[in-house]
Image (tube, rainbow, N blue to C red; front, side, top):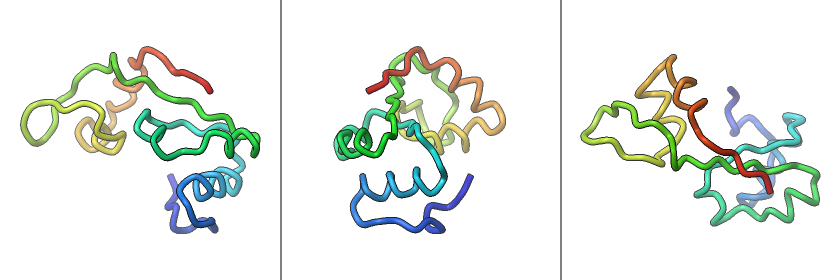
Length: 99
C-alpha cells in the first residue's frame, strides 16, 4: 500500500490514475463500478493499461460498525470492518468484467 500523495501525477481524475499506474509500473487497474462515471476508458486503452471492473452484486454481507449492512461502500469499509478476514469476502465476488 502506498499513499497516492507520494506520486507525481497530473491534474484530472483519469490522468492522475494513469500517472499513478505508470509510476507503479502497473498495466492493470482494478476498479469498482462507481468509477465508470468519471474514468475515461479510452485514455487507459491508449496508455496500454487494462481496466478491470468488479461486480459487487453477489458479495456476501458483513458486519458493519454502524447499523444495518450497506453494500457498495468501499474496500476500506470492508477492511476496517472485517480486518484480516477481508480477503474472504473479496474472493466471493462473482465476476470481474474486463473492458
